[in-house]
Length: 63
Image 1 (cartoon, rainbow, N blue to C red):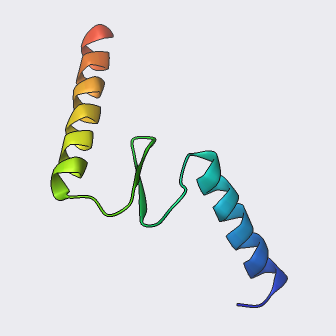
Image 2: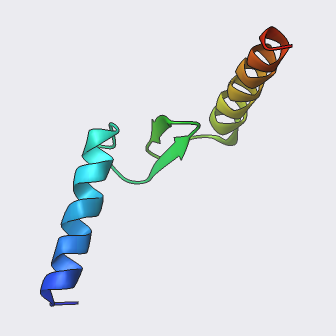
């Protein structure tokens, strides 16, 4: 826990999180979209449904 490797790993992960917009915990990444804080299940369901619909539209456009 106190090694340089552990410190570097935590620093790397923190920087990656900040880079994608994570500024608090808990934080979730759904299809590249950060969802911050404790959220109701409906928030996750809506975001997943939106991502699935976008994927379907992209697939339909490629056919």
